[in-house]
Amino acid sequence: MIAFDNAGKTYTSVLTRKRVDALAGFTIEMHRGEVIGIAGPNGAGKSTLISLLMGFLAPTVGSVRIDGASPRPWVEANGVGYLTELINLPPRWKVPHALERMANLAGVPARSRRARVDELMSQLGLVEHASKQVRHLSKGNLQRLGLAQALAGNADVIVLDEPTHGLDPLWTQRFRDVVADLRRPDRVIVIASHNLDELERLADRVAILNKGRLQRVVEHGTMSASPVSLAWRVVFEGDVPLDGALPTALRVDGRAGAWVVEASRTEMSGALAALLSTGAVLVECVPAESGLANAFRAAVQE
Amino acid sequence: MSADRSPFRYLPWLARDVAKGPGALFLLVIAVVCGVLWRVSKGDQTVFPMTPDFIQAGILDSATIFAVLIAVGGIVSGDVHNGYYRAYFSKPIPVWWYYLQRWILGGIAVMLIPVVLGLGLSLVLGGGHGITTALLANIAVSFLLVGGAVLLLSVFTRRDWLIVFVVGSVQQAFASFVQMGVPVNPAVKTVWKALPPFHLLKPGGPMLEGRPLLHVVGYGLALTMIALVLLRVRPLGSGGRA
Image (cartoon, rainbow over all chains, first blue to last red; front, side, top):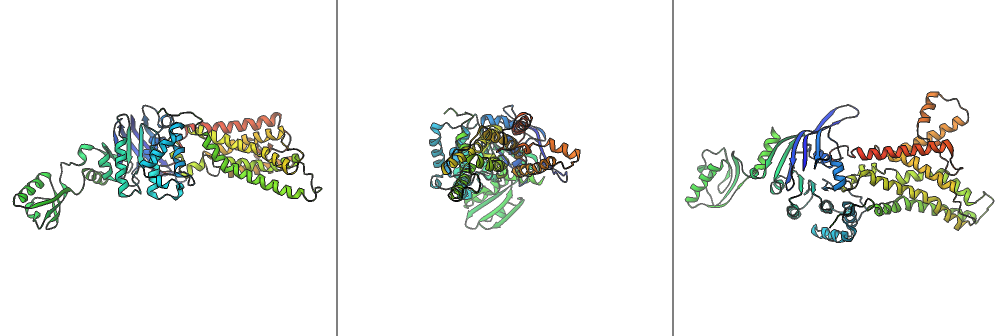
């Protein structure tokens, strides 16, 4: 549905003619039914990529297509559910009024618009802020308003740029539920985020960007599994000498009972089996860092 | 739920914005002007001939350009600068169409000034409203030229209104020099003639006719059309987050 083909964007300073490649040689296809994550450090090119997808910028080289069309005409004909990193709406608009306007622009018919606004306000916890102007909303509430306006229409493409920016842990979790409900066989959801844990939970694939280039695409099945050694966090009841059971591990830190270990899954399983057979009680054994985080770190260091 | 894709669906909201923004300001200024004239008319009426025709022409001759700048200044650039365009134009509406509607509403607000002022004048002074065909026609062509220039510049810069104001003022001054017979470098004169003919606009004067009218209308239409084409083909953003 969405195809970036060797897309690049170069900014040239008017005064110094200095050129900066914000995005270079980016190629990926995003299909209906998928949730695609875009990860990368600050300045990696995530926002430029989204601006290209929305048609707010034109690529300097290569192409971007949505259903075979240029992004701007496609967006103008169909609309996109778009949450910007920091939503900007006129500050004096009241919350329901802002949502009603955005629903109107999104094409929600007049007869069902009020009901849709009420539904969104309820879904995103904005009812208690109904009397507030946009300028009086906290960052988290503004983000929820941004998400609500993005969901006002019934778009086939949803683009969420740093969607949990400013949200508290409760609303971060609720946001994940909202996005999970948005999945549809005919819809593409693109999420750009610094939050790898969020992408790991929500995305089918994650494109990792660094310095304007696509470093790698991590598939869902490989995000939490890695063929190489992983860091594990292991906690036992009482003092259990894990270091003695892992003589070949790359790293064993910590103290009796709570350890951080870098070892392969085979080594880890063997050591745990040996300790459990001696009566040790395991409290938890979890990867200290996810496969996606590993891939991200490796990609950014490359 | 079938989507409402009517091209006019957002028009009522835009009309409300214009009414609450420039429209309210125009009303306030008209109310103040009428109030002052009412006070003056209670005093010595021989100070100046206070007919509504004279007052309308006098006020609108100098105020029309300011009214147009207020009505459409920053029309595109304001939304781009504030980042509102990202929410608006993720929705299914063409950029050029959105701003054309907003621009026309600004024009309607400007065109209503002589009507409301005329009604106010007839209320406080009596003796007619001063609304003439020439006045309305001149204000309409003034809006087309000045508003078209602002719309075009607004695609590129936030200083749209300021540039039009400065260029318009320089041209008026230059036209006065030419009229007084001050010798002018031919190259400078060529540049002056190539610029939008703001100096031909006299909203309170006789109705524009013939070549000056064609010049103003042609120039205004061209500027407006170029602006709309640019809004159709030129991306609004200038950077990743811009």
